Length: 445
Ligand code: G2I
Image (cartoon, rainbow, N blue to C red; front, side):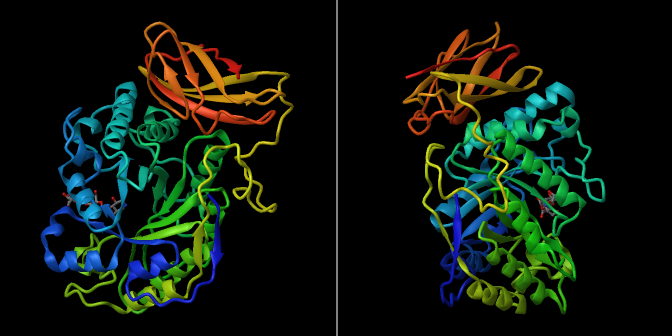
């Protein structure tokens, strides 16, 4: 989706109204038990049009025992949001912290299967109700390495992040899928490590739609905060400020305004979330890091944030153009060639061809299949794949599967059947067992 900056004079009087006038959302992290505090709920509903569970959708909360899911807190938040016109950010499917004890004690292929099952189950439960998921949270190391953080998740294999995104896409194709992290408040080794991962994912068709910048900030704001958001946006992902809170004191209002301005100036920055509502709701204790006093009074930082929202340019999300067959407004400007659009290659002579790339772990796999139209183009296509004995397909996206074991036939869906000569589209499926050695055959119609 491409968005253009537009200038609209406005003066919203609440955070959510001002953000909405500019095509964005303004959100807050919600602690479940606070939903029975009426002073809290009054501010939440008056000022915020997006919510995220501060803790209730984490792994320890949703799967306290392996295979036994508890959605009480998450469902309560979703119900609150639906009753009050708020969108929901899901946080977080996989994170090295707040794992249930049973997962902390697992490793290797057993953990990998448990991770993927967790992603699939939770995203399926909330399917259709989540605007954006933090699929993976905080997977990169602090400091100068730019490398992945060591964790039990990481030790299941470097491909765990892309496997998680693919499983999440399969479970809830309508949700935007985000990577979320902190200490990414400028161009630094950690944000560059993440940038390189996102660029790689986009170039290989791993389904990632957005990057969250937590923005737990101190007493200053990095001069390249906006430039950092922009370089991610230039990779063709949305960006959001996801957990904003700022050390209280003299510079707080300026920093809130600076973050808000930066988001407004980046057309792919679609929203801002503060990590709580009032100072005394914050995990940061006595930092007084949020926009409202405990009394509910608005702080100077509230006013500076509201003013920055009102002063900023708006965005007009362009209409979503389904399917890859319609080129056009999604092409980036010539100065930032998108790595997602490989140069057209010489089309095969007729019909179509298909190739598979696999992400496997013991007991399961995700297959991404690339379909390339021949010189005549296609009106539709079918790809047949013969699975190894014992393997079966459990989930398919961007295609319709007939059968689940043996020879499985995948047909195009309505938006990706018609391909021009040499044009490429992708679909995928998830399976149990081994996916090794599959050779796809493509037939065009
Ligand atoms: O640490 C700040 C945030 C950094 N990014 C990811 C966020 O998910 C994280 O949020 C914080 C929550 O604000 C805390 O409320 O994550 C912490 C760890 O999950 C949360 O703390 C936990 C405590 O560790 C638990 O002991 C406690 O039971 O809050 C729980 C509920 O109060």
